[in-house]
Structure formats: structure tokens, C-alpha cells
Image (cartoon, rainbow, N blue to C red):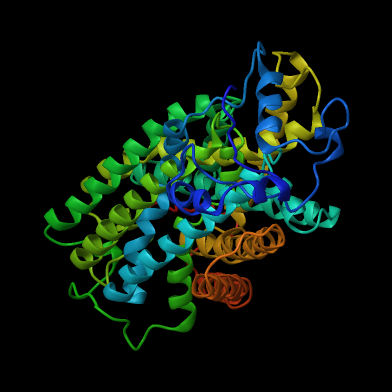
Length: 510
């Protein structure tokens, strides 16, 4: 590449850049991306396997990226191919997803006004922490996924890599399980009046698992982004139809509940702590997706452009989530709302709107399976021809890795057969780290090396940023402790109420 992608990558580089240059165009680029983005020094030395041929450890981020691109030249399978538009498509497909239909249920327990306020606040936190993560990845372009990031962030310790890897794989597998669960729920909804021999819900789960495994076989995100664009479009149509139908239908179906259609602007006194926390965790889960972002950035040809993708997706999220959640909650009311909210629609409307969700049910689970597969595959075949060439060993291993993740996802979907509870568990156990704690720590680590290199902020900005990032870490700790308690208690309550059973043969249709 003829132009340097990054302005600085070491303390000496940082000191050589005039302060005025760092506080004008580069300041805007640090928020919205672009060629003027300023990258500070690394917090960790370059790993041995990434040093130049002469063992030089003083390479800039630009030089490392140039070598990565050069290594792929002429290869049959190339990974750094995504533009910011393609990355935006991946983000849209990740965030404009089935979990949107949990927002009306969340607003039912939080109240309409606090619910919408929390939607905006959580979106702002996720945007800010995602920008921190992006800046961290720019300083360390060798990072391929969040596990590399975790080890780099926590002083290069191997335990940090293994701990992050376990949470990373579990998080992605839980998300795959959610899509197996909802896929079976969809098939049961569409065949509710039909006789299905055998154990119908388990059988449908197996069928959805197989379809998703086949659909997740493409090996590059450039290919997946094309499917992601279609997925996001169909999801938008699905939730738009559901929102319109909730206002058009004369009355929610009697099977969804009983009583008058009423809604609360603020939480009702009868709402329990467990219900309120579960609703908050549901909203947070839908926004928090930083766990995949290092993998997306690692496949961008110009990582400086990532914030453009991020801003476009965040704005769309806030609008869609608030409108869909608010409108459906008001028209359906406290007594008839379900999770997902398709169950609050009459049979015909429910089936039409739910059917447009099929591409997302399949694709989004495939996206997370692909991220997990790449994580394992890259480490098994590092510096091997199987990584970039079409070989039997390469494709066989890729298919086998994906199959193992989907089998695990199927088992989880049968053990925790509750949509909202599964969302809450994922949010409390994994979003606590990947949505908050990691990025608060990343801020302080980058701040330390920046100050050592001579970069300073005004006292007000520095104090405000410090307080904000302490709050971010504390929120993560709250998710991990109080949130996990509420999630587990919610699952126990659901089993006690007889809402579902492990490996149940009964229909779980809406």
C-alpha cells in the first residue's frame, strides 16, 4: 500500500506528530474514522512470529498490515477483503436481528419511558466502548479476534487468552443455540395444527441445526456479508410487518393472555427485581456485539474506516429498536405481550411476519459459527497451505469444526428452552466482559502508554473519561454478579411454572 495507514505506532512516532495535528482532523477521525486517524503506541511488544524477516521489532502498524496483505496476494482464499460498506452489512446482520422482538416484552416490565431511555443509553455505551476497541485493534493489527485482544490487553498472559477463548466460544455457541431454539419455535408455529410423528420439537431442532451447519460453510466474511445484507433486509421487513399488524389487528389472540389492553409509562409496582433485571439484560444483549468486532476489523482492507460502519448501524438500531418496541408494546399491552412478540399477533399475522425472519434465524447463527470456526481454524493451520488453498484437509477440518459447534448449540437449546431467559444468561455471563469490563481496562492501558509518550488531554476531559470508564467496568461487574443471579433465578422460576421442559417433545410454537 502506497500510503501509510497509521500515523504512529511507537512512543517516538507519537512525539514526532505535532500536537495541533493530533487535535484537529485526527480528533474527528478518532470518532468517525478516515485517513487522518491517529494511532498511539502499542501497549505490548510485537509477538515473535510477527516480527520482520530480520527480526525487527520496531515495525509500525502500517508495515505489519502491509505484510499481511502481501501474504494473501495470489492466494485462492483471501481474508482482508472487506470494505467499510461490507463491514456495515455484517454489523446490520448481527444487530438487526431476532432479539428486536424481545423489546416489547422488556418495555412491559421497565415501562415505556425508562425502556426507551435505557435503549438510547445502552446504545451510547456500546458505541463508545466499540470505538475504544477499534483504537486498540489499530494499535495491534496482528489481532485476529477477541482472544488475541484479551491476551494483549491483560499483559500477554496465557491464562488471559484461554479465559477469553472459553468465554468467546461459549458466547457464540449460546447465540447459535438461540437460533436453533427459535428455528424450532418457528416450525412448530407454522405446523401447530398438523400431526407430526415422534418428538416434534427435538426433531425440528435437529433439522434447523443441519440447515444452519450447511449454511455456515462459506469461509470468508466478504462472502458472508452478501448474505448478511439480505438477512438484515428480511429482518427489517419482518419487524415492520409485526409492528403494523399489532396496530391493525382488532385484538391480540386470547391464547396470549387475558384482560384489557393496558400499558405503563413507568414500571408497575408488581414488577419484581428478577423481571426488571431480565428486561434490562434483554435490551443490553441486543446491542452488545463487540465480541465479533475484532474479527470483522481483521478482515477490513482499511481498518481506519470501521467507525463509519459502526455509526450507520448504531443510528439504525436506536430508531428500529425504539419504534418496534414502543409501538408493539402500546398496541398489545401488558397482558398479551410475549417473547418473541410474534406470539402477540393473531394467527395469520403471526405466521406472515414470522416467516420473513427465516433468513435471520439461519444466517445470524451461521455468522457466529463462522467467527468461532475461524478462531479455531486459524490456530490449527497457522502458516499452513490449508489456510488459503482449497484442500481436502482444510475444508474437511472447517466443516468438522462447524459441526461440533452446532451440535453443542442444539444441546443448549434443549436444556434452556426459554427465549428471554437464554438472552439474559448470555448477557450476564458474557456481555459483562465483552460489553464493558474489557473496554474499560483497554482505555486505562492505552491512556497509560499515551501519557508516557507525551500525549495529554485537558484536565476536565481526562477526569471525565476516567470516571466514565470506571463506571463502565462497574456496570460489567454488576452484569456478572447481580445479572447472573437474576438470569438463573428466572430460569428456575420458568421451570417451576411448567413453562417448558428439557428435551421436550411438546410444541414450543407461539
